[in-house]
Image 1 (cartoon, rainbow, N blue to C red):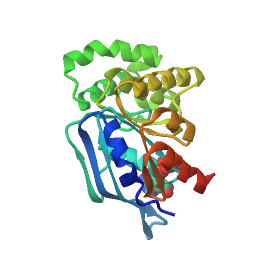
Image 2 (image 1 turned 180 degrees about the horizontal axis):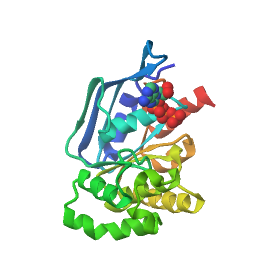
Image 3 (image 1 turned 120 degrees about the horizontal axis):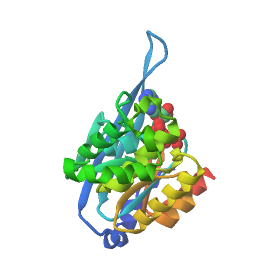
Length: 248
Ligand SMILES: Nc1ncnc2c1ncn2[C@@H]1O[C@H](COP(=O)(O)OP(=O)(O)OP(=O)(O)O)[C@@H](O)[C@H]1O
């Protein structure tokens, strides 16, 4: 079942909700992975197929879909970490940070150096960045380990550092992958609260979640991915009802 016209049906109402300018345009994007079956056998796998949608400033978009639907692939694509094999992702100058994914950390460098690199990649001037470092370290709770190589960090520590960098540096677009979880329980609570505040504010957010209620609660618009295809996108309730009918 593919709901072709949800976007156009909902577009009129949605346009009013969209507050700002076009930040990113994803056009007919395809991503292909090579899966090594053995030394001699490679299989091409299409993780995203002909995906299109736009991201406007001030809106929060919820991406929902089952395991393996292509949600994380879509997030790394929006962040610019990977390039599409087909179609294009046009970024009109927005800084994007993959909150909680810690993608792009250089393992041999310290947490501190990774903070600086992430900040520079987000377009922060060095001086302004230096003023923010203590705040990031304090939010992350990493303490003295900040000067150790990131390869010595636990998964939770990496997640906490990734979240804290994005939280404090406030990029134009926050990509939040809720399914990944961030650190221990106390930090999860702290980060969930920080994230909610951002989503409720003017922050532009793309949120991946397995939980329809989270998206219903926090997002202006939803995209349902299934096997790399956009099954429906547009008004949150319409998209989630279609998703729940198929999946639950
Ligand atoms: N580097 C890779 N090489 C080969 N296949 C990959 C790679 N990364 C992801 N895939 C495959 O692409 C598909 C989409 O993966 P992706 O991680 O984007 O899905 P997802 O919706 O985020 O899943 P989940 O909800 O389980 O995190 C899956 O079938 C996955 O196995």
